[in-house]
Amino acid sequence: MAVRELRPGLWHWQAPHPGWTPDEGWPKEVSSYAIDDGAQLLLFDPLSVPDELLELAADREPVVVLTAPWHERETQSLVERLGVPVYAPPPDTAADLMHKFGITAEQAGEGSPDLVWLRAGDAGEWHPYAAGDRLPFGISARETRVSGIRTRPAIGCPSASRRSPDASTTTWCCGSRAAMRSCAATRLLTSATGSASAAGSVPV
Image (tube, helix red, strand yellow):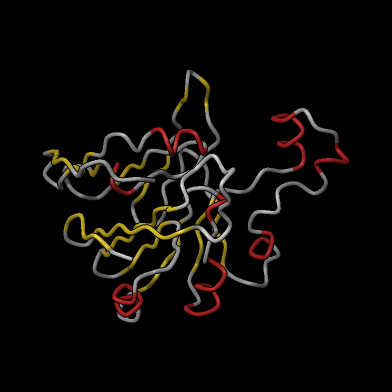
């Protein structure tokens, strides 16, 4: 597994998703990212975190940020190993599932099983966020639209970030599974001075 440092302090890598099957509508290789700001190491949708980043985590305050609740991947093991806090959008409730998919209350059950271990309250530190929220480490989440439809909030990809001229705020593309995949076509990294540099096409 190769990890790419896209620019100083920003890494991207891919690993095979353990739950993938050939009939899935998404690639077997999924992406994870890391950002080192000198104090915190932010791990986005982590899966098979490279050893060099785990070593760096020992000298930083590691934080897991999930771009969607179904991207938990190895989050639980990182919580158990490193005691990391987790920032993630809340999973769908039973009412959400009934509204989106037209299913019955019986079929919806107690809602999405995503992050159920974390939401129980005794397995880790969960910080839910929604579109419009600004997270403590300077990231703001916003909604995107796919075909004119507003999607559920979820922070998007680090390589699509845009930093403010004073480097105090980073805004991330956010959206649904479809939006996350569709925004992989073009990536722009904007420097702290506001000038844009191409980062290339980076898979989600």
